[in-house]
Length: 81
Image (cartoon, rainbow, N blue to C red):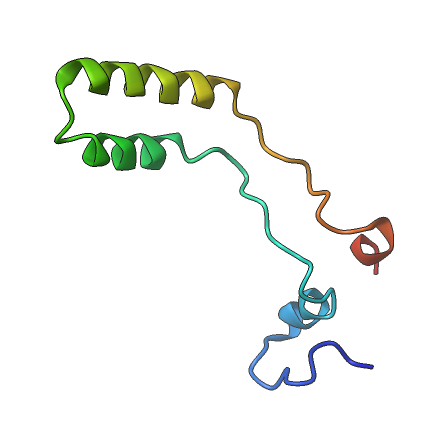
């Protein structure tokens, strides 16, 4: 049975991707540290300065330890056409 019966609007290079099914997700190529930091800073705007410093330190620590997941969200059979 076809997992994606409605492929009318897809480009030619998008069809093989749609055939992988719904368990496929694109992984980012790099950690979006600047965007994460900007969102955290805007969210902490109303906190006391001491709490902002503690939160900022935690976020920086997490970002330093962050790594990208390898493209393992597909089984080997689904990765290879």
